[in-house]
Amino acid sequence: MTSVLMVVTGARHWTLKDGTQHPTGFWAEELLVPYRTFTDAGWDVTIATPGGVRPVVDELSLSLKSGVTPGKATEHKEQLAALEPVLAQPAVLADVDADDFDLVFYPGGHGPMEDLAHDPVSGALLTARIDSGRPLAMLCHAPAAILAASRPDGSNPFAGRQMTGLSNAEERLNPFAWKAGWFLEDKVKEAGVEYSKALLPLRPHVVVDGALYTGQNPQSSQDLAERLVHDLG
Image 1 (cartoon, rainbow, N blue to C red):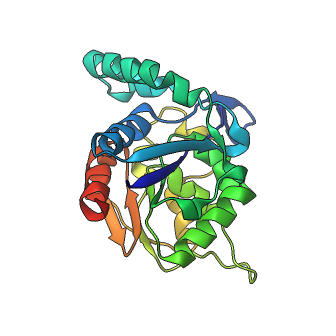
Image 2 (cartoon, rainbow, N blue to C red; image 1 turned 90 degrees about the horizontal axis):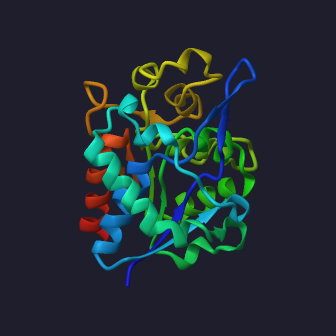
């Protein structure tokens, strides 16, 4: 059976440049769609968070304000309720051996900008994983986690790799974006990533570079998950 380690943010807020804390967490679609796609394929999924804290959903990802229809919001809420026993007891990321899993998958939301972007455990995991050449996938804001990865000489192990993630244009669609301390697209480019994006905002875009898979935005959730099932199944 294919096994997946899903590394989920444990953050409950995103600190903006003025010091205010914007409520956040994981983005519903980015966790639920891949989780369902993987389990429907018969895969075993383990959710882990920094410190084993219970992850929380970003309520904005269940709101009309983010373009989620009432029907889709209801569906997501039902799926979250069914997944509650799993979310209530995530594994402690530091206690998990990523080598035991066929795929490591990071869903997004603004949460990773707060914790995973600075988490040394996650950073070490990502460095080892990219060096191993084994499947690794990140979605939307989740590539922020590569900012915690580094080599002894200070270089980023993802430098030169082809990746995507939420674009600056898409981030600016959020009304609070003007208070953001940094944007994902800018930071991954600074780390040396060969970044690409869809021609239009909010369109699905998946980039595959060897065993490294990335999806640009929530709209890429299904395409990314299905590509992984196709390639690894």
